[in-house]
Amino acid sequence: MRFLAAALIVTVAAQQTAHADVDSGPKVGTEVSALKVFAVTGDQAGKEVDYAAERGAKPTVYVFVPHERFDRPISRFLKELEKSVKDVGNESQMVTVFLTDDADKTKEYLPKAQMSLQFTSNPLVVYPSAKMSPDGWAVNTDAHVTAIVVQSGKVAATFGYRSVNETVVPEVAGALKKSIGK
Image (cartoon, helix red, strand yellow):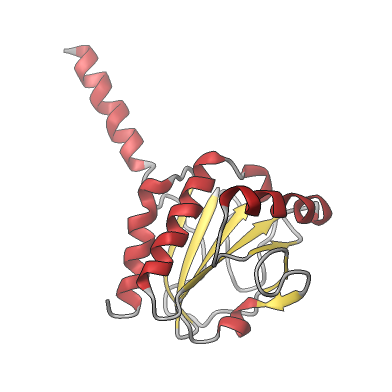
């Protein structure tokens, strides 16, 4: 009986990590701020870009990842989320922002990650600080991943995770679908 109770507690704890568990990202309904980053992959590779201005009113999922926390479960999450975002259509796209204190090292690493993960519509970009998020984006640095769903230039949903893998993709993709009325 004790074993069964312990197994139930472990199962419930594991399930809880599969949902947003950190307050991270701007408030729902606010307009997004500028997102000036360096694009390492994608159509804008090699350039400084304001992705918020570039994407404008188009549905977008911005994913913020502290570079030092990037691992296989996060990779699986990103790969599966990219597929789900593409399936939504309506010009939906995701942009993954790596927060780092060593921008040069991260810029060198991300093309290798791109080759491995084979993203087709998920530019990998660098923001040069691991301790602070871009102004107005309110990314909590305790989160291993922050996903922000934006529609028509406004925040539709935010998700902050201390632990993440592909099992939470339906939660984020569902918020994207809801934001565009699908």
